[in-house]
Amino acid sequence: MAWRRVATVVIIIAACLIALGPAANFLVDWLWFSAVGYVDVFWTILGAKVALFLVVFAASAVLLWLNGSLACRFAERQGHLPLAVWESTSVQRLAAFSAHLPQHLLWRLVAGGVLILAALIALGEAGNWDVALRFIRQAPYGQSDPLYGKDIGFYLFSLPAYVALKNWMLLTLVLSALVAGAVYSVSDNLTLDEHGLASPRVIAHGSALLGLFFAVQAWSYWIDRYLLLYDDNAVVVGAAYTDVHVELPMLSALVWLSSVAAFASWANMWVRTYRLPAVGAVLVFGGSFVLALAFPALFQRFYVKPNELRLETPYMSTAQTNCAGTRRDSVPVGLREKGREALVCFSSAHIAARVAKRGAMCAAPFQLPVSAPPSSDVFGFAFWL
Image (cartoon, rainbow, N blue to C red; front, side):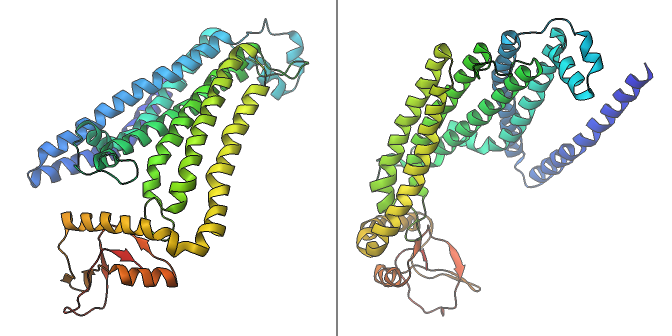
């Protein structure tokens, strides 16, 4: 038919226009890497992006298709379209037609939606090619952190990969729930009965997905324990007094609460009520607000802040050792002039005085503009005051 030919031509033209951007970027990068003699680096990056795209696409498509196909099987289909539908409004007719959608057409719609969503997820995750390569080719750093005793290589190579994997799992679970919900909605299986409940199969499917979400959230809280070393409390960058004595135990408690919520949601696959998922949601989200946000903020404001110099001094000493080690491995000691930029390293006595006055923030050595003369002697470790 003529309209199909026109639609095909439009789709081909649109695909070509969309492909122009990636093709131009590919050509420019290939020419540049070839010109500087690093064409092998270009192919390594491209290979990592393609491999990561294919892996994420396959994994996302399998999970999305699994939930979409289960929803198609569990959905209770309606009978023939009643004659009264033709006398109803357009909105009612649309709802009735969707509820009586042919099974083979519903499967095709689910398959098309799954492929599109999986491709979009894979395109977004392909940007983490460097995280994947660092994780695959990681090596020990040879020095451990002072809080957990883990090798620094864990924070450079493994932790970023775990965070990216966790984010992908959460996104895929949310999209899986949306795909299943769309199928149940089209099949008119989300309508509540006289007891205020949806179809038992819908409740069981939703409980399984919610349990997986809570399980991934428990792992997320476990990862957040290590991310405390990246925290910034306006005194030091890293784990400080509140992080070690309050947030670390609270995050461990949230791991257990999320695990309990996950098992409660999975148990609801047989109980099939709203109470267990509601209790799990209160445990996870309410506990997260109270234990991870409100209580640490109040503790920092009313207990740590009035005694900040005394309580934070041990953690400033640890930060001094870490920053000094970083400086030793990367830049020479002292003040190095380069135009109007210089590496500034303040002494611990100077830091203590500034902290007592208005606070300070530790960072790894870096260059910032200063007005000190070339003959100035400034030693210690890098702080932004």
